[in-house]
Image (cartoon, rainbow over all chains, first blue to last red):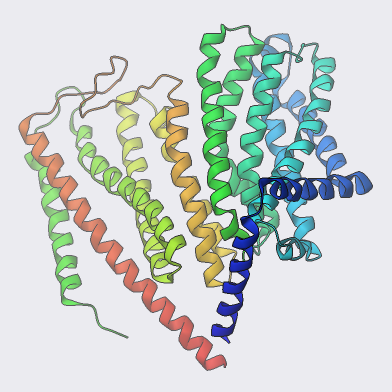
Length: 247
Length: 232
């Protein structure tokens, strides 16, 4: 039996590598197909998006009471409050987006598709990133409105984009792991948060710099850390995603 | 059940003897530090455990790659053993550091880069064991463990570098010249000897524990296979 399955997997991997030899156009097609599937499913159910949004607004509400956000404290903690909100809401979205795949065997269906597995990874990253950015785009004006701070600065938006890419890049890989465990509902934040601390740290530092009008040369270092982190972890996830989803 | 090999038994004895010798050097032979007094003696074991634990974590990241390449469960058992022993050693490092920091910095804990990174590293590897606990299939457990250990091993140094954006007060005793460090000191030859004895002692103790843990892992594996045989 064992011999048989290994034969089958050999054939499979042989087929896959043959398919891999195809043009990069088919890779992009596969990625966009995964993204399109997620967007369409979300557009119909609106489960994930509404949960993330309401959850973020509730977190801001809790911070309001926990920190007494008066004018003076607001100056120093806005970046921290924003990033804590994004981090918590982000785990909710990542968990849900992978749990949907796992629940009705959709993941197996995806894996049966004759495409490179990293296409599935990138598709998932892009759709997760899209949901997270949409939530952030709504949270920002609400926060601006509630606390009378202008958050629409190009620098801050860039930091949010870079930070979200790193967060989602690692988070997608780890959520693919955590949904396949027995403790899947609680495991993701425990796995994700200690690993993603450099992103949160650099993002808070850079956001704080932009909000308080610090010189750009001082903000450059945390931005560099964000870029380096994004590149390293997306490459690592790209290399090892196949090890996570194989059966 | 195979009996313990003679070499391992010798190593067991050697580890105990070296622990005694190192304790003697640290508590008796090394001179008392002028400013901090006797509490500085914690330093020797602090360095010894920190050095071995960090090497162990580094080694486990290497084992991740070897496992993912070869897919031999042997390497997974090696990795679990390395991380488990390193986790305990690193916890000892943190506790000893805290004991020293109370009189030297007047606080048990401060959010300095080294301390923060140490805490986060501990959390990463605790998460590693929680991840493993939730998976029944040995192959999948090994694969996920290897990937997570690799991610953790890459993330920890970046965390350290990122927190360095803030200033540090941790003394760098060996080849360091941070003027803001508090509790720094220069070592006399006797202190150096005590430090090297501690380094050697803890390296041997680490290897001994590591070897014993691998043996335990192999036995666990055998028990699991016997259980499966009985159930068939």
